[in-house]
Length: 556
Image (cartoon, rainbow, N blue to C red; front, side):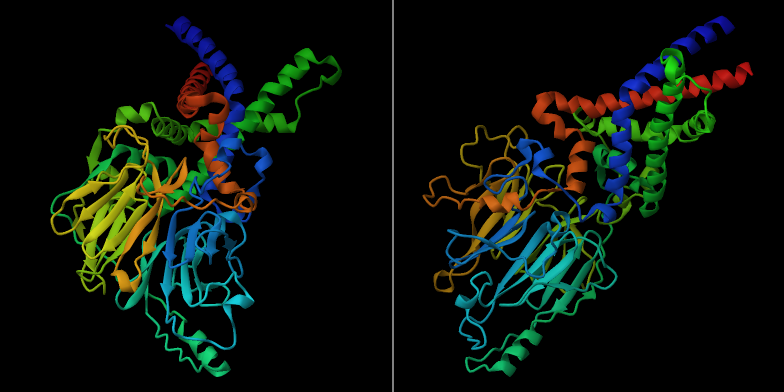
């Protein structure tokens, strides 16, 4: 029996050594990128030049989330996305970025939601004229939900950061106006402020202008956002559970710290493995550099064993969950789920009543209620937050990435979209109508490439009626296109300087590296195998390392 164990040990030792050398750079990259992705603060102001970013990531035609949402009011266009907020005063023929007072780093200026509120256009402020500065829209105030907080731009004023109590530094995912309030949503909370009164008289003077400026100040307070328990436990897809296991949220907010320690352990194991391999190899093959192992080597050898053994179970969880989160292994798990009240999800955000983070919000004017799209589904409740929000069934297929578009076309008619396409939903009857992208072949949303990432809504002039209509839709890969293929109006060109001046943030670059997509240009569809192979490799390294450690202990 000891002979068999010895043979297995030799094979295990060789596999651990050579597989480790093969994967060491990959695992170091995964450890470092995972650590920085989990702590975006230190790198949020850094970006990556286009020169070292693959060509397929460079934007064109407002694609790749460079446009998430937009509003057209008459001839004025307001488009928001990764570059921030772009403004056109001439119907889309020219664009200027509204940057004064806005965060400069690409990560922080990434805009997830935009509220454009037209004010009293009969008003006239004699202290400033639109022609004096055409980059500032006249008599339209803007509120931008960004990764670095909520920003407000009063008419003809620079952007200002709005204080949300208890949410400093948190990303704001959406901002909407109800009949009485402006409501901003973070991933887990809601904040509301009464709508200010904009009574600017035509005979306004300097004092009147100052009063108008003061009247646009928002004072937000935390809203009582709660969800009513569901009648029966919801099902949580396994891919969301694996995602929580991979980022540590499976044990709640405190999971961030153990995950950081495991990332540091992976970095130490990779670096110490290089030292443990290099010193004997140098002494064997490079006679000029031959010398006795120093203190650093004698430190790395025992601690490589100890850290590897103590961190093994966590490294296995990271490796397996990462491998299963990417195709083709993800496809095999897609049909499976767990009940929300499963013991595994006790501390996970999936166990709360909303089932995860808020993604989009909408004010339903016909019923004076709010509709929330979260990772756990849709929820509806009163606009004054007087009662808990109840689960709401929306008969529209939603991609696992979540809702990307949620707009009211007119009272009772809702536009819902995701990477499974765009749909009109009639709230009262429950009927839906798909609005497929122009040129799309096939009608099955589960088999199509209808990756809706945003929409540009055009407000209907008051003399023509009420509401708004989606004039342009935005595909993640192909960018902006008319909603109706018969529409002769072509989308505006994206100014070249928008992409040139908005490189990928370091956080997004590391995210693409971490999931392997950054290699798509060179490997084609084969890039999908990088993370599964790396995860399986980490699993084998952990198991062989454990066996070698146990064998040596038994032998000693």
